[in-house]
Amino acid sequence: MDQEKILVIDFGGQYNQLVARRVRECNVYCEIYSYKTPLEKIKEMNPKGIILTGGPNSCYAEGAPTCGKELFELGVPVLGLCYGAQLMMHVLGGEVKRPEVGEYGKTNVLITGATSKDELFEGVPWETICWMSHFDRIEKLADGFETIAHTADCPVAAAQNKSKNLYAIQFHPEVLHTEYGVEMLYNYVRKICKCSGTWRMDSFVEESIKAIRDKVGDGKVLLALSGGVDSSVAAGLLSRAIGKQLTCVFVDHGLLRKNEGDEVESVFGEGGQFDLNFIRVNAQQRYYDKLAGVTEPERKRKIIGEEFIRVFEEEAKKIGAVDFLAQGTIYPDVVESGLGGESAVIKSHHNVGGLPDFVDFKEIIEPLRDLFKDEVRKAGLELGIPENLVFRQPFPGPGLGIRIIGEVTAEKVAIVQDADFIYREEVDAEIARYKEQNGKDPKWKPDQYFAALTNMRSVGVMGDERTYDYAVAVRAVKTVDFMTAESAEIPFEVLQRVMSRIINEVKGVNRVLFDLTSKPPGTIEME
Image (cartoon, rainbow, N blue to C red; front, side, top):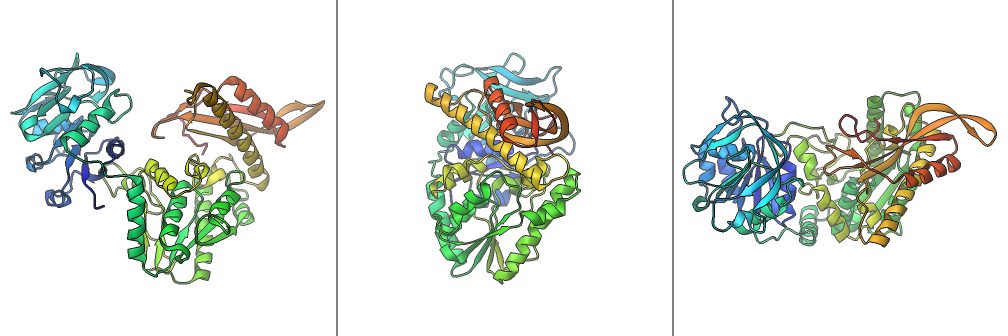
């Protein structure tokens, strides 16, 4: 990207993406790179600032991730966070040791050491709550540094060398538990690094449309449109750039939420707001046949994924050769696949690192590759994609296939679609009611909520008759990053309405359960 940028150097910590997102929230472009990135490459990128992230190691241990002191001599501001702070001191001649006690969780931090606060803590109270997570600590500062914050157990919670623009913070300003963390990072990025804040979605969309036109020329582009946020925004962006040169193939595998296939077609199909070639493949029965008798979750995932490839391959062959295959890859896909940082590979993404061999194309194009999910949503709004699609809840690639425990059948899909629709409708209505009365969302508003079908059948009584039907489980979680999650406290009267409606309106269900499990030990999805 031709933008002023901040580099996040990753030493294997869990918060590298969160740091980068916080920087981008300051309207400054940011990228994540491994600590193994050569210094010459860092120089070539001409960063306005460098942030060293946390990591699981002790910086003084043999073989621990490290960097040369030349990194601190580039003439650009450097901010070390947690491990990055300790490493800065260690490399520059300070001392880091393991004390008898570490610090974990919310901690009272006192800003000290100056008659008036410096730029890093501008707008931050002298006493503030920050999130600590460390077993080592800085015992001795490197030459030229002064302590600017401490805690009861940590003599150096923050330090600076103003003459060289070097800053070290022992806590994590990027997490929400640090009350003024956003202000601290803003101060670093906008005031210390002097970034002007030109990274905005309207300019990204405008520049991307121009870049796509220049790249594609009069070529043809093929995109697999799932109906999810990423592929939908990619379709919208490509359509604005090249119109009918784009063909979108939407495979409806019959495992989408209720009415979702029709909603996708209404936006991207004939009569919708985008100028493109839209092909909908109704492959529901084909998927049900393939999944018949299959109960093991991983096998279901593989069958659904492989069948998607087969269907897409058949449609691609009908279209013939195209110049570009487009994908809805976003920045977390790149980072989590081990291509953008140092942290362990979390998962393999089908659209990163390996190109499909069944489509005849010259090159791949990934218009959203540099964006985080929240930025993708903003881009979608800029493109005029309806809010209900842009802010659609996360939905797994295998769809309802992993929200149905055991074998997937057309009957079970219909049950979970109807139950899920009722549940989401009632929760949404209650949120809207609360917001109208109070002018804000309720504290219990979940980040993801859905119904799943258990494989349990039980005895019930409906009317004067004995029933033996399925139990539906409803789930609602609150989460910041979907890495951890807690059960949301949906009001009991809402759950009562949901239970009553599902049992009365959905044939084949006589029991409704509420899933209270957090993540960990559970996962957000059922399978």
